[in-house]
Image (cartoon, rainbow, N blue to C red; front, side, top):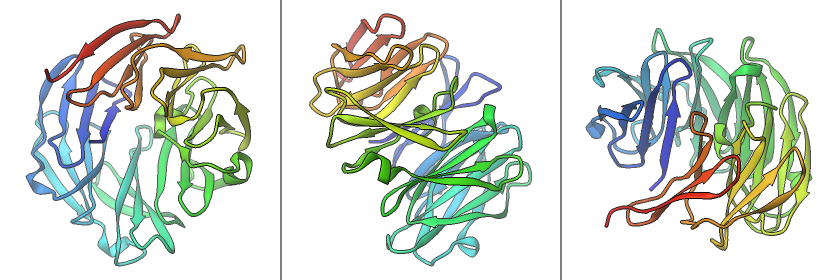
Length: 311
């Protein structure tokens, strides 16, 4: 099960969803209701933008649009006329609240040629153009405070391409594969972008090193640290710390960017992804049913809660 957490920058609305399950919408700590997934066959990603919930349906090759308050289906945006290949499908979503633009990364299921990043206007609920043709299937992530969109490819080519959100023009590409070297990289969309510094973080599944990319300047450096081999990284941007779920499940790797000191938060590692709460200054594990969930204090990295779910 893959969970997607999306928060609206101008409200407390949170959208949570997972593949083949019913996404639900919460306001604060109150669940407002579920979105009926009977309209779609296989949902890949969700994005909250301009009080609307956008859902990518890879089977129907479309984006479904729901009202974030009533949760009613508004329309279905068919993408097939705009795709690069007949076997493409929508894969990843990222929304810019300032411009009202939704960026849709398509998935090249053949994994051999370019796929396409499409742009959808949130108000008119229509495709407005193509941003770029890129390799295979790429992630899209937004740093709204710096007006940057990043197109991340980790499949055939390992690159980061930066775009200006106001002009939708490319600002350059960084070959992160050449910097990282060997090893499968992990990335967690906006959770891997440091909102305070604009740094992007990439973990390494095979080796004890991770990659930090200066997003505005498109430069990168690797950091070699014991026990840093793990899954997708998450920033606590308020403390300027990076957290990684370690491969061996022996706790959570923590790197203090200010001091350069790395260590392990000896909390129960459930092997799932981590999420940062700005309001609480805490790191939460994305525990699945019948797994444990852990809460880590952002200041001390001490374990606050260890709770069993589903039993």
